[in-house]
Image (cartoon, rainbow, N blue to C red; front, side, top):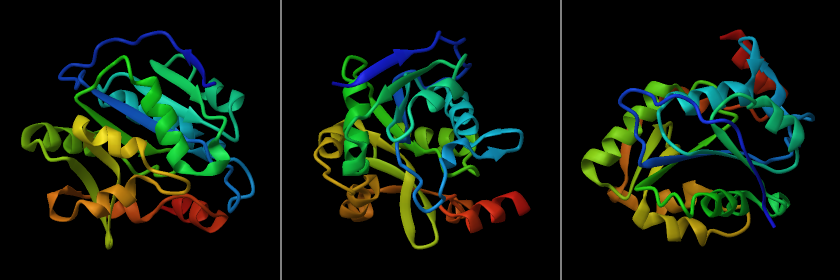
Length: 210
């Protein structure tokens, strides 16, 4: 059974995308980093707090944080933010289970679309996320994804018609697998900074040197 908790609701953001929900995935064990990367410091706060504040600033609602290997420490990091925290007890099976856990938490909200983002992409900005959402809402594309290098991937916005397919992903399959399967139907927003994520000590050092 999924554990859920909710923090107090925040103020409405002007121009917010209230019909678009947001999943912030942070369930991994950070094996390549050797410590929970979600709790590494960046610009005076942890990567997770930074990501959660970025998520809230979009105006999407609800915002759901999915934890896994680390739960209590991550839940504490979003104290005071309008973020619902869901623990995925099956996190070891791969990212697909975290997506399913997040979607289950959104079942009653019936969002028109869902934005998925990760906690280890600290160069993601509220402006980028709003651009992804705005393009999806205007074009009604099944998915609008960030484009970096040769990748179309998360952060990405999935129309409600794609949520069943997201829920059918298995094991280590992440949202990028579904994005790739849709080919030219996917909208794109350029995000060259997406090439830097934080999986290893070397990547963390590169982030701090920017």
